[in-house]
Image 1 (cartoon, each protein chain N blue to C red):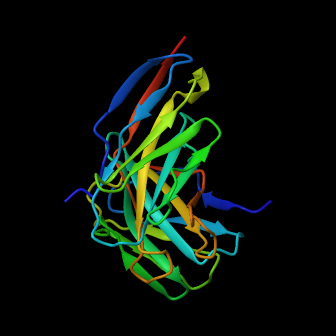
Image 2 (cartoon, rainbow over the protein chains, first blue to last red):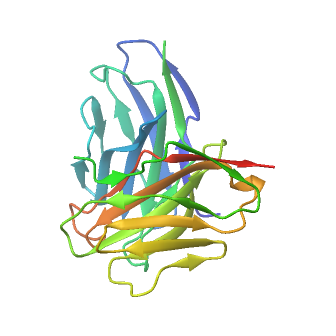
Length: 114
Length: 118
């Protein structure tokens, strides 16, 4: 089945550690996105990429890094510089060629910093 | 400045009634798209409906319709004949541009939590 796979689903991290969240899609979509969700804050855009080897900062990129070396993969690293990393992280992709270009989401990764 | 505003943090509606979820947006780009997503307690994001800035008619998908008022920059979601399964968070989102430019991105509002009462 085509879709977006995020892993791990749950992750616990000690303060000061970097952690990488995986996002893989087999939808052949060009664009990929990372959002952070906190209660009452909606979804906030961290990074996005419209094409391989290119990505843009979103509204809350500080303390995060990404890479887009392959079309199907867009991993997100939460660095120790991110002050409040505990959150629900959602990866999504979209296809420019469709009429709507809506986002297709993974199931999310819940990160807890201990 | 917030570009997507959802002014209703929470709503309670009686089952079978119609419900309107408000969304206003701000953009100077003539080309944009508006989306509504549903997020049940399971956390998955479900795409409901889309409206393009050049679309002449309001979008409809089953029980969902989008009341698009371009001059007022308003894109309210209307759910007809609400059901218990409609209880969820609802997010309005906007894409500025047509989607294939490097800077095109999709941003979300803070959401409205809808509770359907039996």
